[in-house]
Image 1 (cartoon, rainbow, N blue to C red):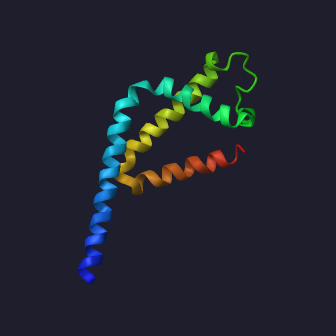
Image 2: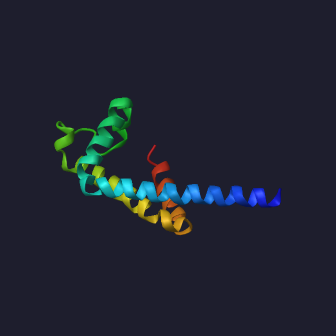
Image 3: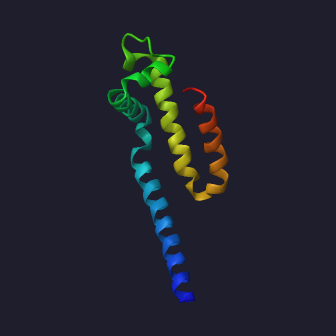
Length: 109
């Protein structure tokens, strides 16, 4: 029984390792398109939850997707995702960075 639980742990670790590799490989296929991905990502958010636009400084833009503030924020978010994906190999180092980002964003509403 003890060796069985040891095998399960090893299996979970192997699945986690494979998942990290798959996420990193997937991100590698799209990482050169972060600008467009960011625009699409926020377009989807604002389609699903239009009120979310009100918490952003570009809420008054007449042409949102052409607004440089919007485009810069969208790109920055996707670059942060890329940093997180890269950091999956050192989660202990990544977690404090993501927690700090979450705390900062919690204050935005």
